[in-house]
Length: 335
Ligand SMILES: NC(=O)c1ccc[n+]([C@@H]2O[C@H](COP(=O)([O-])OP(=O)(O)OC[C@H]3O[C@@H](n4cnc5c(N)ncnc54)[C@H](OP(=O)(O)O)[C@@H]3O)[C@@H](O)[C@H]2O)c1
Image (cartoon, rainbow, N blue to C red):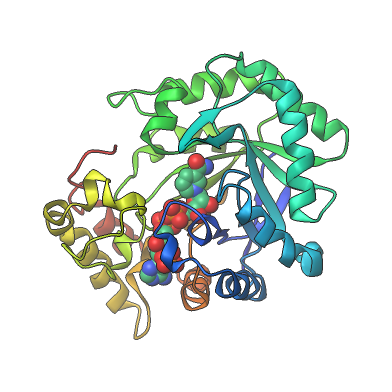
């Protein structure tokens, strides 16, 4: 697979990564099976999709435990990206950016992941009670201690973006302001934020900000939580513990209204030959956004991990990119 270089630390990764969240979090728990997920991680590594994106809160903790079982055998092949700063308690997610907590959380992640170093340690959310420089300073100390190679910031999803000070009419303004604050303390190697055909806002300012500073960009939710793959049926329903059961873009009405996006991806896929899928076109569109960009599509299934990795082989033409750009904007609020 094509390799891309992320951030000042010049970290080399496969152009497509693997989002491990659906294996233990956010999507219907009845579809989460450890043995299948393990095979999926191995399949991604075999295909060169070696950036494994996890977090201590996925599960909580079970996702890191799962990835640890793979790393025990294949640490040298993987690029390990995990996160700190969010805790699950009593069904609520709370932020904790206190330095002492960050240090303890890192040691606990290392134990679960069965490794002695994390390649990319990301701040999952800023803690409103703690100046972000203090949290970031504690994370920088982990680099100095050799427990972490590089640091990243997540600004994913509307709630997180509000935490960073973003508002709808000014996407990523607050995130950029805070990125500039933490840059004074220690270099940011990567920013993780939502980027997909139906959520392209990061293209305007955040991606150029990253490119101009040599910061990598991890595109989360690159398949629109599965919608852009064309495999979901409007009105098909979601289990109550699936994030899409409450997501305004996943009501039957909005899924039907947004079908032109899927149809557009299908048209482009058909031009590239049999077997090319809308999911692959959606990922290739992200790859075309810049050499500093790495999509991390999430899946728990071997078949889809293989298909998604295959998107690295797909080069879209200028006409394809123009056609995708001209698709109607997504209907439905972003939170
Ligand atoms: N930093 C943050 O706060 C944050 C927040 C959200 C996400 N993320 C990261 O971003 C990654 C990606 O986001 P995401 O997983 O929520 O959304 P996504 O990648 O846009 O979509 C994942 C969904 O698409 C399905 N899927 C994947 N490949 C497919 C294919 N080729 N054909 C059909 N369906 C396919 C998956 O199904 P199955 O699950 O059934 O395989 C899953 O339901 C996460 O795994 C996580 O690592 C980070």
